[in-house]
Image 1 (cartoon, rainbow, N blue to C red):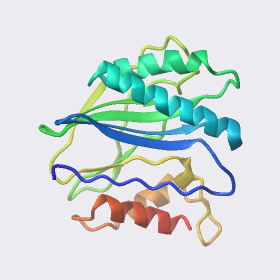
Image 2: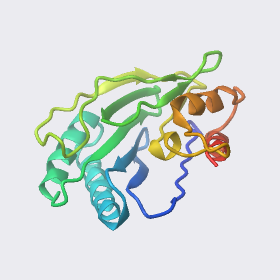
Image 3: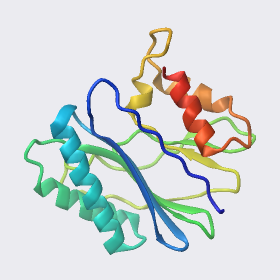
Image 4: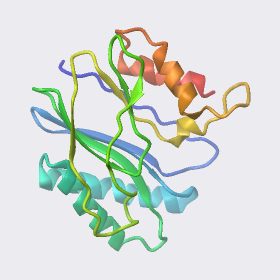
Length: 200
């Protein structure tokens, strides 16, 4: 009852490496991640499955320090990277009691923050390179205080590089415009459907 969450992933022409994950670490902390593996096809899909499972394993071991989770995951995934692929990822841990978001951005597109009464804007971060680019990179843990009614919308290039019905590339500007038209009380599922509809 303290948060609303929805995720949508629809394969395009071929299998790819986009992924999302979320689960509660304990009663008051929600882990979530959205990522994208470089390349397409079966190698990307298999590497995605490996990366997703290792990130989850690290999250369950490191509890609620997202920086340590991503640092450990980066080291472990890099060891099994025979195809020299990489993973962009935005991962966070939301404190369901306080609304504090601790997050890490590994080369992923910045999420959109939707706050009542304000235009959607990017949640910028120091971040770092995609996973498997620099094995010993020290990813910083960053913090942001979410307010009641805030919505965080994390996307992949499946949205920004999609072609609209008018045969135009969606891009971040069009995605932001779609989110800007949402009503103040729009839920996560309706926001996901609005983006999906705009990108078709």
